Length: 405
Picture 1 (cartoon, rainbow, N blue to C red):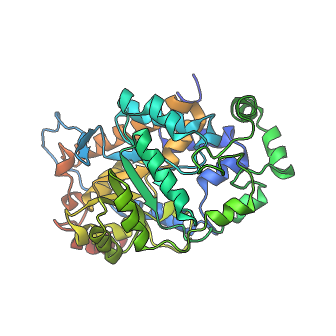
Picture 2 (tube, one colour):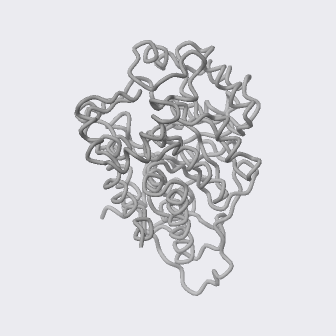
């Protein structure tokens, strides 16, 4: 029995990934910022909500299928952008994209990915049934961002996601302790870490060394698409502290497809996004990886979903580990969720097969939760399934108060 076969849930995949990856790479994927408070709060928010099962409902014909931006998906989930996928597995972004296409859910490619968007589109794009989204970190020199937008459009990506919650570099002190930084900068500490993981070194790093050399940020603009190493010039050019709503207006003008903003956790920001022609917002605290004292995404979801109604698509990001988490997010107003770490763990263990297994584990858990709560379709998932719940997002506060008693 392989390591992948022994994994029965995302937490098993996490444990297997921890064994396989160098500590520095695993902690970059797994941890948040500073004291890890935001990461813990994301999970605690899901865990506080309790559900009631419904008796004597014929759920034999239930389905997790739904639609996202007018197109069918096999479950209301998409793969979040993760810049470290290419260090979990050789060309891990491609492995993830193939798994998503096979599972019939969208895949989001990160700006910092180590596989080019053109290669992703060729092998996991619409031609093979895949749905591709591109996540944009806005460059200080906006022309570079416009280049990436045009490039993603030409490659056939259907959606552009602008990340707006990484205004300044986060405090992730453990990366420095581990000798690990992105852009990729191996030093003595990290080199010793690598030597303790020869399988990873052979199957991941050596494959890069024997083909392209040092792993590269393949989706950086022309002139910066080079070895992923510490480069003060690149760091300065990727500053985002000047990003503002005027940029969103320009991106809307330049991008012909679906436009989303990732990193919303205020209702007023969500409503303003409508004014700027945004098609979807992603309620996210960046998986707890940026501001450690930030509110949990699930806790702010109800008021945001209520504020925008059906005027745009609301997606939840940060903290999803179980299929029941998706059900809870849907009941509180989300149309779908993004998951990043869960499928990264699977990718680290088994490439495409591992990522696909992670998706299926979550799908099966969602299916069982729907059955227990008497929901035959995604549309039937409402706050009525909560312990103490009622119809309507305003009841979420009472649900949380009663659950705390």
